[in-house]
Image (tube, rainbow, N blue to C red; front, side):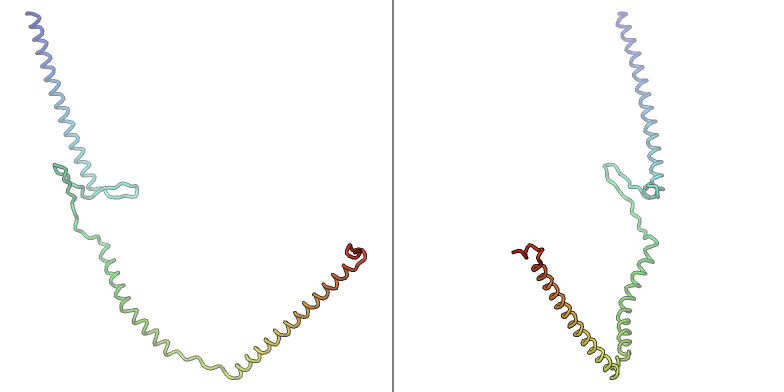
Length: 177
């Protein structure tokens, strides 16, 4: 029986150690869960205050709330940014100016066109001088054409005469034929 008693004492000691180990593990798990909860709360606070910055940090002013079962609720802010009001007023003012101003500007432009003096007829002396200059330019063009035709004829005659001279020269191979 001493072995059985020894075995029972060992089992009792092992059970006591096992209980102590379980209690220690539960305490550590509870502390870890509390620490995780504190970190999550700090992260939620930080996320609530964070904004987009030039160095790339992006934060959400109202983080989404996750309910048990996976349902997500995103808080909605019904605020209009302050820049929207002046932009919308400027847009509608521009449209009103275009609708009213365009026909008004057309009417003013037509009135200016009607009141402009009509082009006056050219005086007879100026017209006669222009006609005389036109006739002179035509005559000069005809004379230049005649001169260039004479030049072409002379060049052709000289070229033909030179060809005949090379054909008839005694030193050329064509002259021996």
